[in-house]
Amino acid sequence: MKRVLLIQPIFPAAKKSLNHKNYLPIGLLKLAAWQKSLGNVVSLSFGMPTYDFAPDEVYITSLFTYWSRHVKIAVEQVRSSYPNAKITVGGIYASLQPDHCLSFTGCDEVYVGVHPEAETYHPDYTLINTNIQVIHATRGCIRKCRFCGTHIIEPEFTAKRSVASEISKRLVVFYDNNFLANPHIVDVLEELADLRVNGRHISCECQSGFDGRILRKKPSLAKLLKSAYFRYPRIAWDSGVNDAPKVHSEISILKDAGYSLQDIQVFMLFNHQLCPDELMEKVEFCFNWGVQVSDCRYRPLDLYFDGYNPRKSSQSKDEYYIHPGWSDRDIRLLRRTVRKNNICLRYRIPRERYSQKLERFTRYRKRSMLSNLGITSTTLSATELDAINTKWICQKQTDSDRKQ
Ligand code: SF4
Image (tube, rainbow, N blue to C red; front, side, top):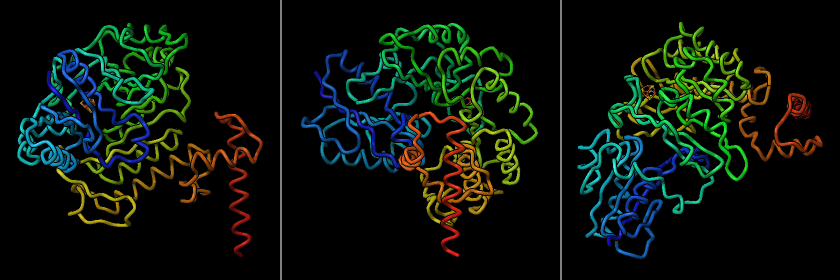
């Protein structure tokens, strides 16, 4: 019997990501289930290990290459606490840059790609406290976008015909790279629509969004997604502004299936080959269509640092990656515009009424405004939103009258 310690380093993820399900160490949870099946004792730790046994083996997961420093810190901490333990690093950074990972972190071994034995096990959710279940119905991707490392980490596209037997929680998040590319997608969606957990239907989300090209080819999938209780559908728009009609038709397909525009998001890669003006045009299209943008700042797959700080007013090229044709100013302007548009769409505020203060329009503040207005429901109707906006606008007017 071996003692096995699994570690997810502390990554500098945005607070909202940590509260959400973005970084569940699903690979480690599968490793845990596999190791337990071998009769080994397993513990999971976030950051510095606190477990009271000296492990024989330690598995550390990694995320983006530009967060490699945090993996190195974890390896060093383990090495100084447990000098005799064998340390293996796996995950995204390890798979994309195994040589760098081995020499930079000082680990004993790098694991590249998906662990075939662990992959056959269901994640061991007894090790974490979460109400979310993460599922992969497919691995790999049918496409090979030049900025994406999926084809390196998961070179083979594999798909399951059924996932229902794996599901035991009511909130299911699919970590598939290209969920709709599954050749059995109709079967999977139909079983999700019929599935009940504790007598109630489940809710699903797809972390990486849906492939719009497949949606356009098979628009009937949008209705199946809706019936399978998928929420917050996201599509990507990484091509040029000329593709606006195609993206608009993907949004219309989702809307016709019953999704509200406010719930649809468009992933948009920036700081890459398209110039800043073209990105701003795309962002403006999305605003006019009434859909929010999720901006994704490009970093090369062999970038090992990222010192971008959204709170600073300016930074140099030495501090973070700025793509040729882009400047620090362009990046901040784009992000500001996206944030402003999203807030205006989310709260139905006219853009000319936007104030940065609204970014502090937190759930708590919204709730207190609601209760002042005598509104108790948690899902806001258009009338209720209008009431809040009117109150906010009146408040702003009163504040500015007072100042004069
Ligand atoms: S479709 Fe998505 S997952 Fe597939 S290669 Fe392109 S970016 Fe990567």
